Image (cartoon, helix red, strand yellow):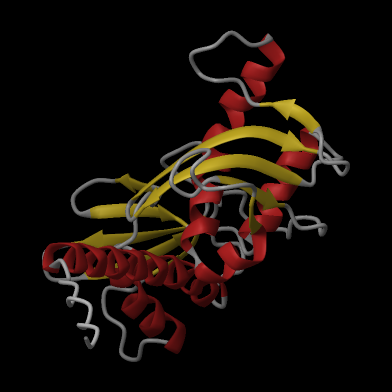
Length: 249
């Protein structure tokens, strides 16, 4: 007797729809992170020392109003002002037109360091010119031999949870175990992590969300079922020193 064909497998429309939504959200986050770096490049053509931009957030538009050096390095609310937008500009410079167009895309991203000011004004800290190098420099101030971070990620769009386990040396062994927040650790370990956690986690999220940086700096370590949904990851620190400029990721 002829063999009957295999029954056709039905696709699950709900699963396909959820998968498409997930890919769309990941792409949107990647676009926002790439735009964030490009925005920093554009405004620094006007003022290379820029570490933060002031913008006006309304229901109809987001508009850049001023450029500032790093407010964290000065007595707030009067850090040195680099540039302020005139009430009316007869001819806007090209860098400002590009920056204004990029800002709405940037604001679609998650985990942005935005501070609310008076009225509708907001202050957005910009990424360092090289986020990975800035992260490496921060870590090597305390651990000069550091070559990588060992960490796990629960990476869902707009919800990237980071757990850093170890700072790793050139021979692959731990230079410093990051203490769990709920466990006891020596005071020096607790102090270093408490002072640097925000910077490190923000940089890891930024590098993971950006497709080019993810490919360049992350290496999977073992099966992804061992830890969170992205498994155990090594974030390989670049061998070059951090570039000069703002310290935020």
